[in-house]
Amino acid sequence: MNNILNLYDIELKRIYKWYLALLSILLVGNIGVVTKHIRNIIMTVASDTKSKESLALMKLQQAKKYLYETHIYNIYESTTLLLGLAVLICLVYALIIWYRDFVGKNKTGYTLFMLPNNKFNVYIAKAITIVVMIFGVMLMQMLFWGVDILILKIVTSIPMKEIFDLAFNTNGVIRNLTLIQPYLIDFIMIDIIGVILAVLVIFTAVMIQKSFKIKTVGIALGIIYVYASIVIFSYIGSITPFSDRNLIGHIIYFIGLFIVSVGLSYTLLNKKVYI
Image 1 (cartoon, helix red, strand yellow):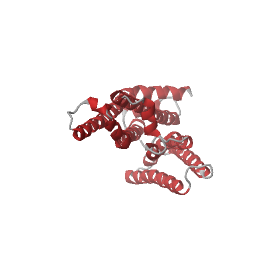
Image 2 (spheres, rainbow, N blue to C red):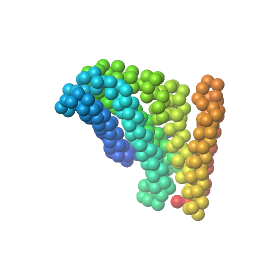
Image 3 (cartoon, rainbow, N blue to C red):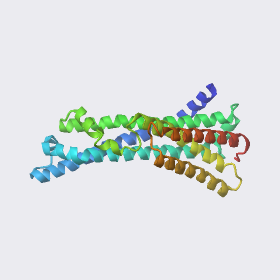
Image 4 (cartoon, rainbow, N blue to C red):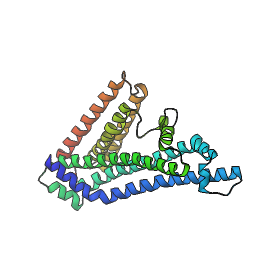
């Protein structure tokens, strides 16, 4: 365990500046989205009332109406897209560091191989690093939504609780959540277990690719593994949505995918990987 934690600490020190930059961009993106919609509301209200464009227009009832009917939804939709892009960047980074730093022909990769540790400890440490990164991105986005609501509260004088309830009530945006799930079981299955499995599947695909001297064969099989994992999950989801009655199908699939990914990666990493 200490070896894994030490390797995790090494990985964290390597990426923290890049990671902070990603979170900063996410925050700026959130503020930019809110600012854009405030600007659009002001322009619309100014046109309707034949008034000069001013931030004071945001306190009018007409501005609040536009915010309630359209813009609060669009703000949430846009910031959710930003979150999706940030998570995608983390997953792409996972692919890059696993391919280059660990099994690639570079100084870092060879250094890791020469460490007096089980090679699989490096696998675990890198997986933990990426999972923590993604969890951190989702957590920060939830905090940034609070910042978005605070900005709207300041310019409209609407209580934060009222804006929050409007944005997250069951008749509004919550139905369109696709990344951070609103219900506990969905959150556990998608945002916790799903994230972990996504990282493991990517790492396993790289192991498969590196297990063949003919690169095109390895790449094709790696892509097939990722694609098959997504297709099977989608198929199970289409016939057995998360519910008390049908949850067992998802649990069985997740356990099976975890065992296959970890077992296959362990075997290939220690016996068949070509560097």
